[in-house]
Image 1 (tube, rainbow, N blue to C red):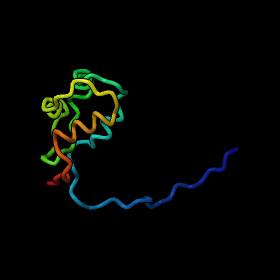
Image 2: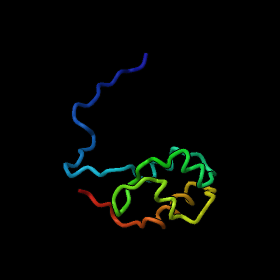
Image 3: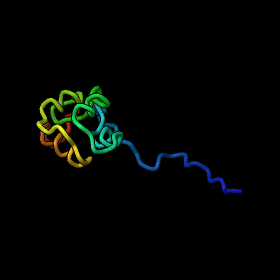
Length: 94
């Protein structure tokens, strides 16, 4: 039988007490997709997802409207195109 270890009572990593950030990290949305993908297919599958941007949360469909690339051969090319469109400044909190 497998040894059963007790769960620690305290969290292993303390969470900050700052304001919550709205939206999802872009990496989380990108990880839910398989590559390659056309931009239209990404919008179809994840367009309603709200991602974190330096200007506040935005739907992925709105962000991709500003992207000229129509085909993403890799996850990295998708992430790079989105970052180019929205920038890579720190995300604002409330």
